[in-house]
Image 1 (cartoon, rainbow, N blue to C red):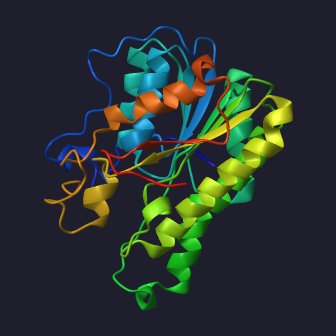
Image 2: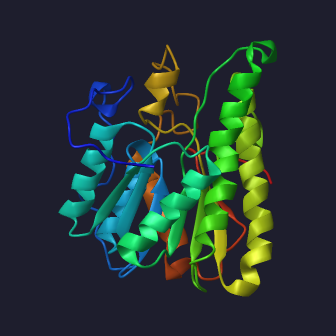
Length: 280
């Protein structure tokens, strides 16, 4: 496990500074009301996109944040700055979630820093568009599953050592888990697994008072999109609302599931997808 280095880092392809328009992570009009006061949240993939939006919303609601990310140092520092501007603490942890030991070390670092862990947001993911299944190599398939679903199991197992009744686990699934995706077959398969994990784990942990839910974003304008697609001019245009969503339109769903407003909600998924009607 690596702590964030102090030296200047190169920007990674697809970072938000290259995006037009710039992603919006939280609305200026969003007013916090201490819904997460005294809470500590760990957010994977929290350096940018939806993860950054979740971190800033949580901070505005009073939570300290532990941000876990792979290698986008400058993006992670920006997230930390935004959290600290809200008057909250932010721990950055850099490394590879595909290692079970690393996942355990991440949780231990969070506990060492904050002495508790109340909310785990499993948001880190990768996607590699391919137009036919024959193009999906064994290495790609393994990486997609290791990052998107195996890491969740490892982090959850480690976090449950410290989570008490009232704890929250929130998993980022996707609209692709429900309607499929012809060019993201392996990614959609992992997101379907995440939905099933969410439902099953919710039943298992209910007696402990730990709630497990998910958020299934549709097309959201994040750095992952220009980083993985060559053409993005039509991204999100096929939704009923006719546009991609902003991270600021997803973050509040995570706030709801993390706070006491959702005390009777577990095993559920909130769909933030621009109006696409989704079945079970």
